Image (cartoon, rainbow, N blue to C red):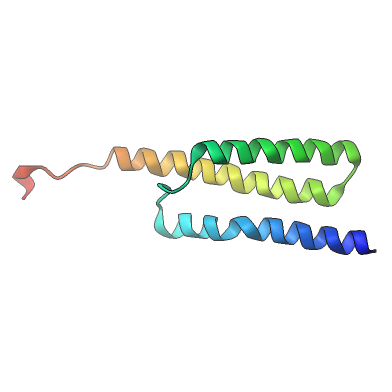
Length: 97
């Protein structure tokens, strides 16, 4: 029972950990502070933990890291999308002033 309660707490806290960043990205539409290498490595880590959880039949671990994987994929998509959008914004020229 203690293992189950501990796993529920670990899953909940790990999932909640990514929500403020997702909220901030959705609110500001800015991803300058996100490092794409960090997101890629975090995604690779999540895939590794999902694989381990599958091999060990550990459902809380699979659920937790699957949710974190979805969060990371969204943040990587947002990073690529919003950074590309910033590149294509028209710049003000002297004639516009």
